[in-house]
Length: 345
Image: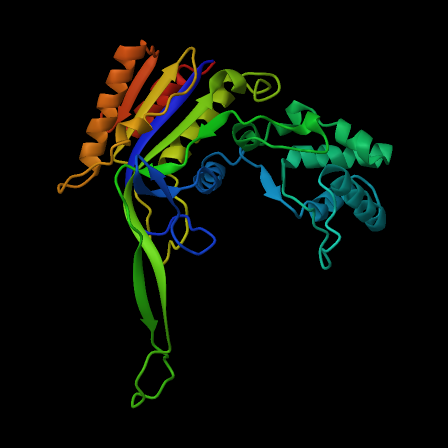
């Protein structure tokens, strides 16, 4: 399997990038020590949003429970009356992911569905011609995802029709801190602007949790899968290169937006190692930090050193072969992307 690996070291200041059901920053135990954690789902969401900004022509996928309204609109554009379009859209939603019987003001599906504009237009047109939901859905082909590379990269599961399921070409790990991290508590108060000056006391007080950490992030991309007819084989080689370049840039730059106005954690990585292999499977380098980093001189530089040592050791021990190895900051971002995408065909 020809694939790309991205190994990223990134320091993030006081923040709560990803919280659990108790509103606390997520953590995990690794190597017997508690680490700060950001789930892969959280970081992937940020990456998808940035990819839309970088290449809006190729990243138009939308994950939603509200597909009924745009689908009905597309059916009206295809010639159906408003009532026919609404009923037809409802039958499509029900056939794909089931209509949520509890939805009132707007027709919603029971689960999220990841769709592309071209796919939506195709379903609407087919339904207008056939007046049959199942036949309309069967009209969907891989080429109808040509405007939604994000579906090919991040995947889609459709329980009601496995022919619509798309296996993700990308792989992500949960980001873990390279060192031990304990969550901290911030006590804060807010002033009531209209409270008389002679009255003491805050308008409100509360607490929230935060941490700061140097993270190891890992992402990989199956380049062979992207060239398959069921994925982006329908695109030209130049378009696939643009997809991969967008994936790389968004993965490197994107940061989850949680509490961005009060605890802005938007930083850029201090080190990125990009590797392209012709065969084998993606390999994480997280075991470089199985023993948590301990230093009084900051974690980033030591983490980079340990990452490089781990990769050298694995190459020597297991005979790992690569057709490309490139690192930031040794090269600039655009040179990094150019070297990696030169192996996309």
